Length: 289
View (cartoon, rainbow, N blue to C red):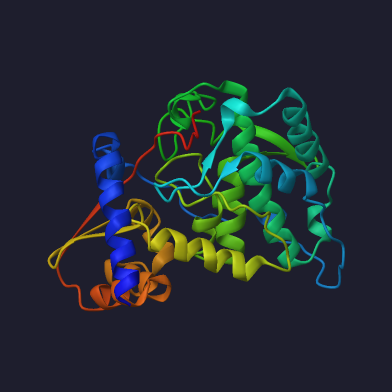
C-alpha cells in the first residue's frame, strides 16, 4: 500500500509540474452531449461467431504508441508515421467500413466501435498534423457540441451506407447501447487529459480486461484523480461532463472511482467530504522527438 501511495504522489507531482499551465480554466463549463440512442444500430446477431480483423491497427499501435513516458500518459509518435503506415491505417478504416456491424454479436460490436473511434481519431490528427490540440481541427463548423470546432460532429465514415461521426459513435451508439461507464476510458480524443490509448486493439475476448485496465490507469493517474488535501480533490472534467454515466451525482462518481482506485486512494475517496474541482488538458497527446 505504501509503494502504491508513493507512486501516486510521484505521478501527481510530475503531472502538476508539467501540465498546470496548460489546463483550460473553462473546461468544466462545456456541456457534454447526452447519450441518445441511434436505434439504427441496436440490432445484433447473438449467434454470430464472425470476428473483425484488427491486425493493421495493432501493428500501428505497436509501432507508434509510447507507453513508457515519465508522464504516465500514452503518447503517439504522429510526426514519425510513414506514408506507408498512413496508407495501412487508411486501409484498416476502409476495411471497417465494409463490415456488416449489425450482423455481429454484441461484444464484437463493442470492440469494433471502440477501435473505429480511436483509429479514426488518429487519422484525423495525422491528416491535419502538426496541431497543438485536436480542437484546432475544425471540421464541425456551424455545429454545436462539447466544444466549438473540432472534428467530432463531422460525418467521417460510412457504415452500412450510413454517414457516421465520432460523436455518433460515442454518444449515440456506445454509451446508450452498452450503458457502460468504462467506455469513457476506452475512446481516446487525442488529448493529454484523455484516458490512454491502449497498446492492444479491443477484441471480444479481451474486452472486459482491457476496459478494467484502462479504468485503473486513468483513475490512479493525477489527470483522473488528484488529491490536493483532505478537503479538496481535483477530478478530470470527464466526471463532470458525463456525470450521468458515473452514478448521476458527485457521490456516485466517488463510488465509481473507488472501484478502480488503488487501496490508498480508495480509502481517501471513501472518506472524502470536501470540495471537488474539475480540470482537463486538451493538449495533443503527441510524442515529439
